[in-house]
Length: 437
Image (cartoon, rainbow, N blue to C red; front, side, top):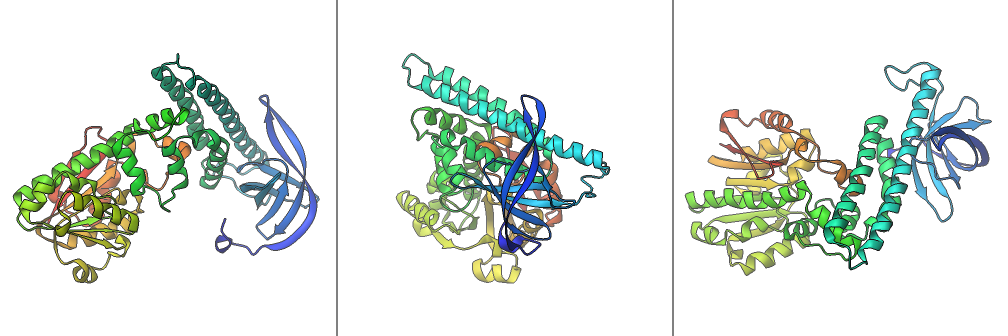
């Protein structure tokens, strides 16, 4: 937790303390007694250092600190030990609306420890099985289909446990801590995949960067050995196919609009690589369209400029570094961009919380000329498995919304139902809404 997010001020506190933690050993619940060095303390928590790898969700009972029980919220691996943050829980803390008695509190914390132990055991099996499969990759007699099937099988198994852990733990902070532990334990082998490594580290500094999406669009593994097969599985995932189809569908929609309009003004929000424009260069040229593409990533804008120059439309395209999250003021939008005939974005809207998104959609709709169109694409969470992106990858920035969520948001943004048309790409995962002003 960052210093500026702490509720209570922490003060230096150096002392050796004794504590106990419940662990699961061969399906039997046992109590482990530990010695730890206290580092700092506050009214709400304590920081300790210990040799034992405590995980988020573990409950500790401190000896010699009156009426003190704590829950592990986060940990950091040091050289030969662990730095652990503990939130102190008073004995009378109500764990949930149904859990109030001390007996039920104890049951709930033990159950949480069991989920943590279950996940650790599943991860250990997962790693060992992947290591065995990796050896098979070097055998020329092994078929690629056999290796792919084996990796998919062990992946499905561990992700089913991850899903059970999410349902059982419920606490978002504890789940996030469990995921961090999962990343650390699986990284030595999963990071051999270029795509998984990139979607865990995000070297461009933000999730869903244009280089990662370009890798998905090109649909070609970049790795070797077991990394090749992990890349291939990632690229063949339903959502990855939907993302590739999304660009094709968007190009089709824009092509139809350009065939029906002359000199349209078009605004592309969070443009990335502008791949959707590459295949419709003739329509852009013939319609004399003027296209403004905005993004906050200079590298993405440079990449788009190079590609658009290659297809001969760069003179009709303005590439600007601009943050779309500033586009809430109608007057300022008119000054910056002027009225538009088409405004579109794919990907960005999935990352914005409801209140932000509603304000942004309303402002973009207001920026349209009469008969102008706002094109918005969303991922339908009911059509893909989110655990692939929350556990195998660290790609949790896009929100899990469904069709009813989209319709509610569009309605609250003031887009009339009568103005909306809906279409999906071939997998059905990506849904496009077009609102006519």
